[in-house]
Image 1 (cartoon, one colour):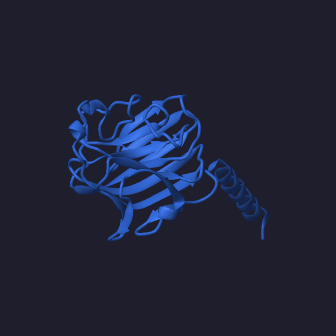
Image 2: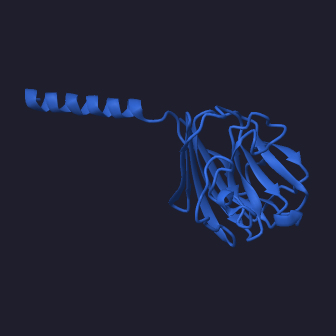
Image 3: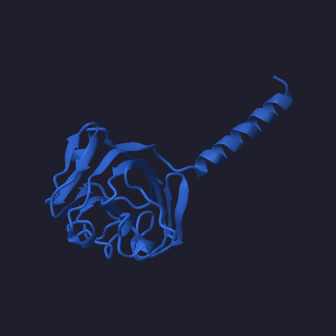
Length: 201
């Protein structure tokens, strides 16, 4: 092997190692995969969470959460969900009070097409990042991509970025999936989670 080829290979190897050093460690882990995943969560409240027809579903009760047993700091979440037009749900991340999930103790990435204040409805982080105009998720399968790295939070709904914000309130905690009453405390529609993956950064 001549010196030029050897040097080229060495440079290529150095570039590859440098790129790998900057990449997030670890791969994607399934938290929900079809009917599987309920054992990754603790249940809070009386929502009727169950595995049904290839998804984790809730559609009755006064409200409740699936709270991950694991705590996360910096991560990416990819989720596939179906929401009814009247659904009130969301993904609460970095909760500092896992026994009392609220928008004041977590970042609430909302799913709520009929929220009375639509600026914090679907696609927003309640109390942190508004979305105008509010996109709609009801009646279809959707995707959420959520990234939390230090204070930098981004949300992408169906391929469109709805949140890109810096916020220092919450640094780590479990995340939770919500089923809640809809507008005017009328029972909300179903929420279904078909796939949810997380990658720690």
